[in-house]
Every structure is written in structure tokens, then in C-alpha cells.
Length: 88
Image 1 (cartoon, helix red, strand yellow):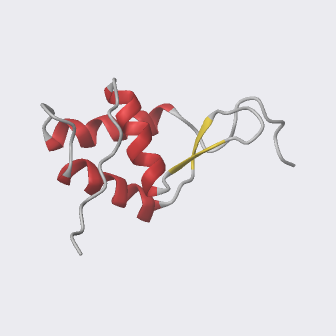
Image 2 (image 1 turned 45 degrees about the horizontal axis):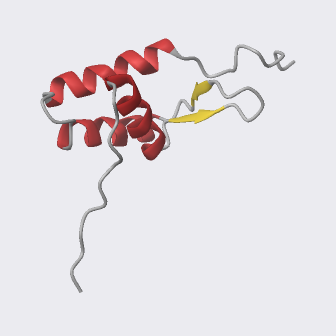
């Protein structure tokens, strides 16, 4: 049987691409109540996402630029939802 690599859907922005890759790797998740992206603080998932970025960057983007976009997005979010009450 012929096996093909499943292609990711077309993404319009680098930020959208970064979110897609980080979700695929399990590095980020969405707050169930408010929809904010949250860093799962999983170093293995981050490394998987960076590997994906380096090996399969979007067309016209270098692997270094793709990895930098992932890091920039991760730096812009936190591990908690800004709308959820703090846990005591």
C-alpha cells in the first residue's frame, strides 16, 4: 500500500503556522473556558515542535526563521489563562 505523508492545511500567516505546529506537537493547548492559548511547559513537546519547524518549514521560509517564529509565539503566551481566576 502506498503511504503518503499527511500535509498540514494551508496557513495564511506565520503566526497561524506556528500555532498549528505547536498544537500538533502538544506544546500548547487552549483554555477550555476562554479559548486562550496556553504553554504546556513540556520541554519534549517544544523540542518536537522545533524539529518539525526545522524539517518542514512553510514554503519560502528558512528553517531558522520557522524555529524563531515558534520561539516568539511561545514567549508571547503564558502557562495560565489570563481570564481564569488564580489557583490557590
